[in-house]
Image 1 (tube, rainbow, N blue to C red):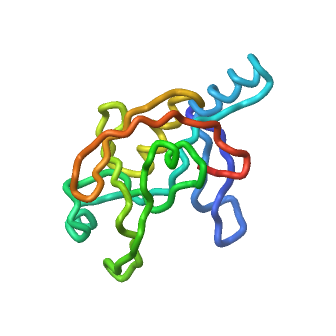
Image 2: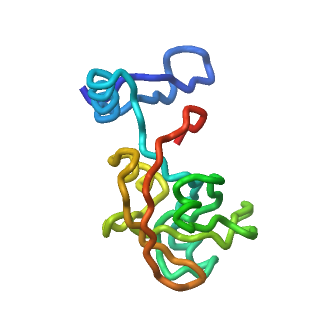
Length: 158
């Protein structure tokens, strides 16, 4: 088994289209917590990000070819407490509005990341209260930021 079917996006209303599933690793994680404590908690960084790819990095003059650009930081969340910055401006790139000026996350605990999805996956491998080290680029300078992850609020999807 590789996952549990969750929903399907279908323009016809039939059982054909794009299916979405919950990965079995997520199911196991939740079941283990439910069995041991009766509740489930997920790690929470408190950012909204956009994937960095080579063309966008060049347009934004970032010293990386991949990663996750922080567009928004949740007020009072773990990222804000660690001093991470969200976007302060915007530009048009490939006919899309792109937020600019936020920190670029390029690694988690020494592991390079290539997308915002991978950032979410690496955070999900941790528990609330764990401290992670993020490799970031801010204003052209490479730095690291230690973040103590929180517990994901019920009204947040990621």
